Length: 556
Image (cartoon, rainbow, N blue to C red; front, side, top):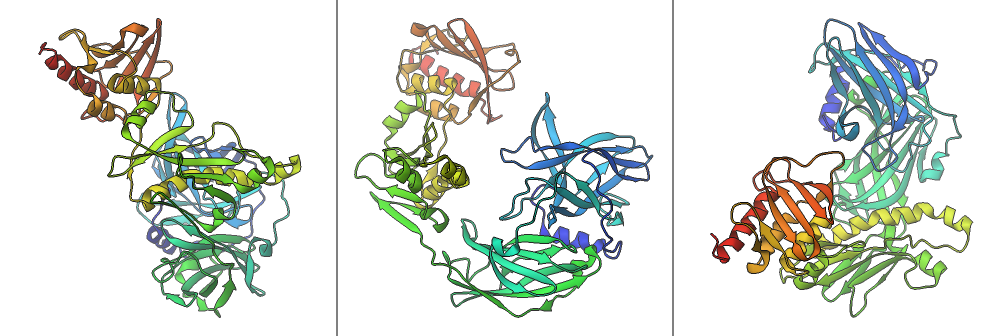
């Protein structure tokens, strides 16, 4: 079971756990370093330190745990009822994939099988909370469960296990996270700012503060936005006693089609129980509808030479878009940096340019730092994204630089989404090309940039330019090549692409693995195709090009 867990499975699991335990008070907190946090029937779990997810570019905290099963039977371990820093949060067990000491992925599960007699290191990971940061990590709370078999409902659940990770800080008032729409002796509910998801339309975040000593579950039954009724509302959140919760509210037909709204009314139901594992089985009590006013949503809609760039409100108020008559179609910069820098290029985030095939092929034979091709249209135009290779963030003072750093980071992370939206909105086809030294040399051999020969022991060297190598080059450039460290080139035959006038060649090995050796001025660098097609490895593509050239030369 991966990161995306079906809601139905979660609900069924909670139903199966009903009435196992009641909401006991938290025990004394354990240390994240070397504490035994679970021990039953030969299964022992020991904390092994805090870290960041080694497979994530974001700051996603994890807690390493060592799991030992000294029993004679396999153990079926689960983790549920999690919270981070007092906020209800899904917790999962991560089994990372490793090779040569490097992490490159993992299984994210609520339940794992621990074989008898085994020892294994897992990590506990935590689902990101909308509008809230998991850092600094102060406290983790969760329950471990055991089951009779891999597919059976758990028959045992611990009291909450609490792990102290850092010094407690003051929690922000719920009103600071949004607009309070409900506040009584049981709970406080606040609705956060409005956003827009490309896949699902408008979305808002709801924050819940449970003031009671019972478990509370809040569900949304229906909604209405600017007079548009919606019977399908995708939202549910539960909070343990004294905890908070955060969850996104998204909508079905009726609201999903809107690009935003100014008035939103939500109808909720609230369930209460003493047992966390029974909270979703109860039919909630209907609450009075709540209504919130939102500011007008100002979308940026820009057009140039028959193409459109649409920017949603969250970003539109922060950027300046230029639509020049020549050159780039669109240039997007952060407005605040433009105003602070007062010079061309300040705050530049990206530009979109359309070029013909000849220009694209010229670029593919060069170092394309700061630019990549991402789409093409039916007329044969290719679309490039130009982006800075240095930081264009500007403010007038150091204090302002520190204050607005998060805004600049958000805009930089948004660029990829903006490019994807431009492609989708204009009905363009996706393209992708590598730009390693291997890619550049293949492009040069096909589209100019020096005399190139292809060779094998079959017919000897032949001029690669005797035939149009476009189809083979296009296919090879889809592979993406990366330098391989600490490995020797494989034995066996290879196809040679050589540039005799530059003492440079590429050896495409026919052995499994799609390896390519670059030899230049006596130095060797080994590459490997990242997206190898087993049916047509790069060596086979180059051999087909070679055979066509040899036939044209009368050798075949």
